[in-house]
Amino acid sequence: MQSRQVWMPELCGPVAPGAVAALVDGPVAFAEPGGGSVDLAVPTVLVGPEGGWTDDELEGVTHTVGLGRSILRIETAAITVGALLCAQRDGWAVPGH
Image (cartoon, rainbow, N blue to C red; front, side, top):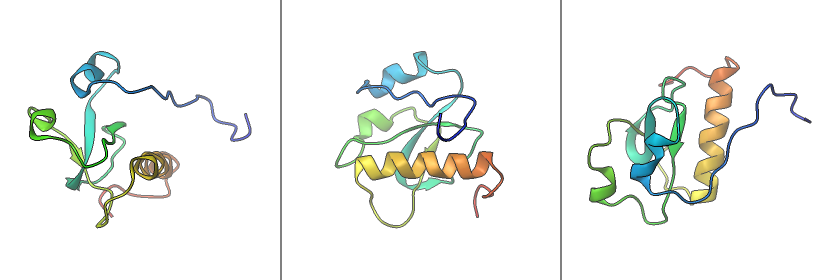
């Protein structure tokens, strides 16, 4: 209520990466060093686990997003993705810049 948003983001507990597509409507990206820019075209971004995704978990993944040059902790990465998506939604940031 304090942020006066028209919807609340949905936070889920741990879910196997392969099961996420069935839970969301639209494309899914994985946060991965060297990935592309966070973009509203792919508003669902998976972060974690500590230590990074395994090759098996990344198999078949079509979208990855990077969160800068440093490796963020899982809780910081989730907040960063949310802030970047909100900034784009509100016109404060342009994807890829």
